[in-house]
Image 1 (cartoon, rainbow, N blue to C red):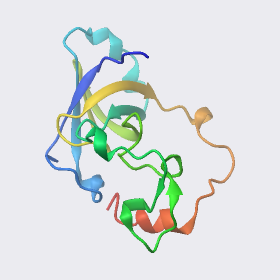
Image 2: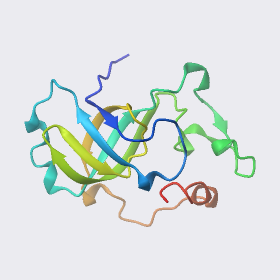
Image 3: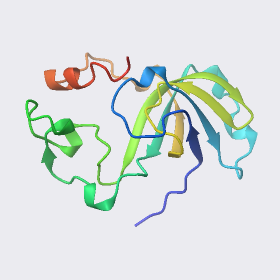
Length: 152
């Protein structure tokens, strides 16, 4: 067992859990008061960061350990929880690459963060192109259908 302490919290206008239209959302990641401004030093030289966060509103009885139809859509195949990016994961950890708009003291303004207001942030990493896949990314058709309106 181990404990992860949140390093910050998300602020935005998304108060309820919703699946789509995340590109319209501007979020502010406000770092914990124990952290110094210097922890963000040099981050403004990157265009994107990867944000790890906790799906804090998922109750224990909704956690998925096996397979299911993504978004409970019976027309999509039943796949394991680790073959999808749903919120009902065993450790409730989400991860998204977002664009940095600006830094202000211990606040990071971003677009593309698919986390609702008051979501705990557990880590932030700069996106370096050398960590991105070198080859073409392969995915099944159902996942492209699922994502059709996700960022619109």
